[in-house]
Image (cartoon, rainbow, N blue to C red; front, side, top):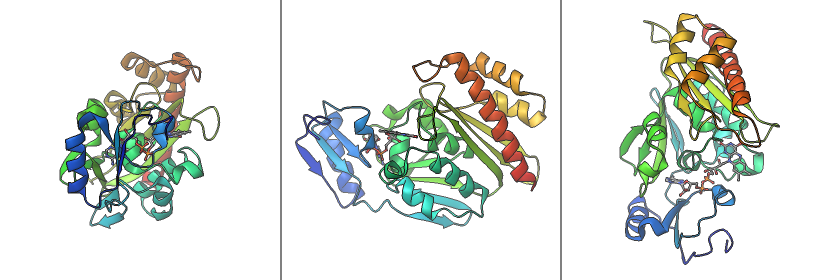
Amino acid sequence: MSQILPSLERYHRPASLDEALRILHEGGASVMVLAGGVSLGMVPRRAVRGVVSIERLGLDAVEREGGTLRIGAGVTLGHLERMLAGDSPVERLLMVTVRRTATTPLRNLITAGGVIAGVGPWSDLPVALLALGADIVLNGTTVISIERFLADGPRSIAGAIISEIRMSVDGVKGGAFIKLGRNETDLAMASASVVVFDDGVQPRVRVAIGGLVSRPLRIEAVEESLTRGVIDRGALSELLGSLVTPRHDPRAEAVYRLDLAGTCVMDCFETATREASA
Ligand SMILES: Cc1cc2nc3c(=O)[nH]c(=O)nc-3n(C[C@H](O)[C@H](O)[C@H](O)COP(=O)(O)OP(=O)(O)OC[C@H]3O[C@@H](n4cnc5c(N)ncnc54)[C@H](O)[C@@H]3O)c2cc1C
């Protein structure tokens, strides 16, 4: 801990959200929320003097209420994987996504809220949540779409605690998530998720991609082309290239990432459409 949080003085384990928020408010930028702690291995926090653990805040339930699935921000991905049922397209999509995230030991630490608040180009679950049109709940009360959160970035929620992730399961007929890394457990070079909705009026799709830029992105222009059935694999990678400038790093060159993303989107679309029409 001394290497990772060299300035740490206080470790708080409050038993209520109000208390946790009070500590965060008083500590300002020198106090951070601590969930699974896995990000500390990636980003050392030299300025952090205090941490507020969310462990005792009771954010650990997975509930189905009417047509809504609610996931507590403190639920680990390992627990989530065990709680998800295979009989709904939404839960099947989340299960596939969680199983493609990191390794089993890490999934037993990484929390649903932590993977959102600590979002980066590598993030998997936020890609599927974006395609699903999920919302996040801040401080137990304020609901914002994950789409807005991802557009604004984690700094936009500084001082807040993500308490829950919720999404509608109604109208979701099919979904898919595909991630391509250098091996089974590596971070994504590119990923995509496609969800097919049908409310009885007109089917529509939502498309999200990961791995290419700093945070997952919804690609509305691709949604339109896929829905109208006017795009093939090559054209899709070209269209993506006209919309985003992918980063490159030792894992993959920008052009290669674009190709991979195009393939991920097309394969996801085929899988999600097949599920929707089964
Ligand atoms: C070896 C390794 C492999 C990985 N592989 C993958 C992978 O395959 N796929 C993937 O998607 N990610 C992967 N990750 C990244 C991991 O998912 C993120 O680091 C994630 O943020 C860890 O979640 P956590 O619960 O441990 O959060 P923490 O590390 O505790 O926190 C992460 C950040 O989010 C904030 N935070 C946490 N919870 C909340 C909350 N409820 N409200 C507000 N802020 C909060 C913290 O203050 C911190 O800034 C990997 C990381 C490592 C080290």
